[in-house]
Length: 170
Image (cartoon, rainbow, N blue to C red; front, top):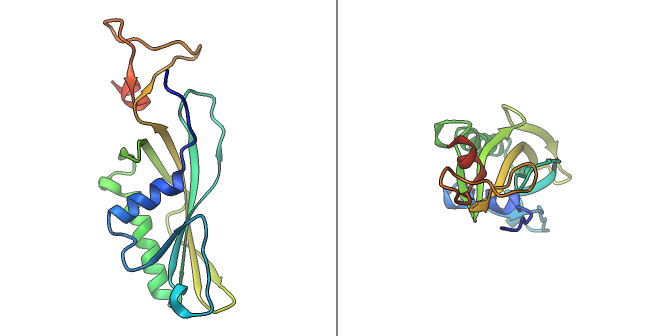
């Protein structure tokens, strides 16, 4: 039986955005938004997790994540935030597009807003925006278990060893 591990959603989303070139030209971080006395970190993106929903099923997790964008220009910061929101909302031109990254399968990303949240300016007069998502995630290649913790078998009596959503949908 496959063992469950905690999905680090902020790493997966960072890697997805990086791979797709969305983070190009920006300082990007996982779990923090550092600052400096110089202007080198004025414009940056931070991808963070926050508490998700508890689930009572095998291997499925519901992690939430937030993306913070800081920029010295309102227009540029707002445009970048909207670009990320649009990309994640319409990934593959469908809100319910499934994708896998880093050995984790995401059958669903749920935006918690339709426009970026304007958080105002910080002490150095830089604009800050946020966007929040809830997600459904699972490990790729899990052994699928039923509600009693028993292996789920296919019609030939073989153990189903795949992503849960494919087993359920198939």
